[in-house]
Length: 251
Ligand code: PEP
Image (tube, rainbow, N blue to C red; front, side):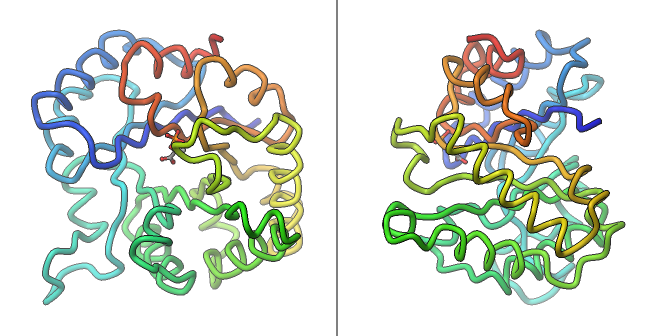
């Protein structure tokens, strides 16, 4: 019932020509791919170029962030409206790097999520605990606060468009991975939260991605878990060969 989704977060990597080359490779290999939804998130400056390279293919475009206003005196920011105009279908919101480096709060993240939904973009809401939070038994509390804060004031109809990415901060870009069972335990807990906040139907229909050093060698095990519907991939999305293997769940 939940179609798998594999999203590549290119972070602050790749020039225009490098972005075009990677998108062109993915486009040619995934032209008729239907086993999973595939999404890539280049830097802002490469969005329109990548949109052009992906045109006519099922691969969708995402932005890595957005600002929760449409237009106005917000120097340096980019709104969901402009992201849509550039060809985006999705937007990553609340990535742990932004939470940590830019001190983004759950309230600010919630405002972005609502604006993205109002504009017709599908938000990928990132949540996850730090190592210190996990080791001091605060993990469930942290995930609860991020889910409740991030999804505040959302309706069940809104939730049909929302994707959740569980990414333990200690596994992002570190090569350390949560075991399949650790990941499943967190995903199952999050799905339980959705059930309480919304309805059992919403909880059962929401797509949840796993993230944090997902590679070709661990995607298969993760995808076998009941509550994991795909992956948000950083480092391994920068090489077409690795990302394609992940999209096809090939170890
Ligand atoms: C990410 O950027 O969301 C991520 C999970 O990165 P990596 O796959 O490199 O750990």
